Image 1 (tube, rainbow, N blue to C red):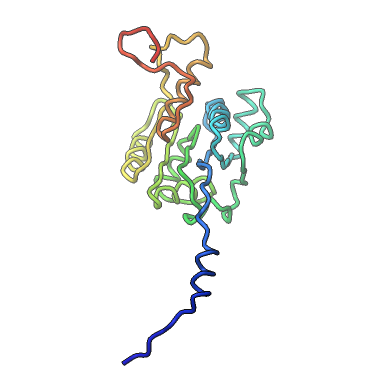
Image 2 (image 1 turned 180 degrees about the vertical axis):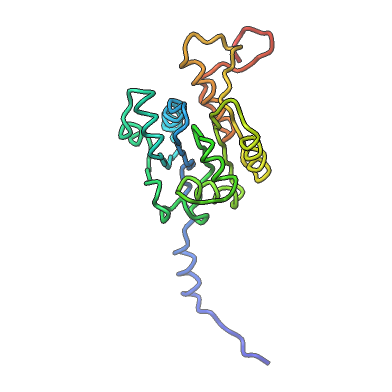
Length: 216
């Protein structure tokens, strides 16, 4: 018969007093920007996430920076300042390169066809495709704002493949029913719909309400 093990009362009491509940954390979303046209979508998304108090982890490719300079008056440093954390695209030791670092999802906006192909094949040749690969294997939300037209069979196959693995393809298609008065109206509507996929509401755009002209 095995001897019984008696634990002193002071040990139990000490343990109970030292146990603390984990503190709630802010929601975390990885934002990746690639060289496809539409950098304003990424900028407006970062602004919206900042306003919603979402912790953002930003990766920008060198071609994202080049496109940013061509399409907008923003400097890359201005965009990085909108994020809580930024990473070099070659930093494969970044926290977001591991599944043990908990995040609530990732969005690639805009997403080039090269990046789509890298994610589709699991290439993991830079931090963007590696972080996306981690999101997929951990069964977390991945949204790819694919920006290309027209689409080849290769593009469509890659889109189908990543969709089957759990990603969501989000082409930034304009919603003309909002009767936009500016490009910014269209951008705000697209960004709002992107964030709907993360259960976040910007309240910055008009939603479809049937033929009723009143906003809901």
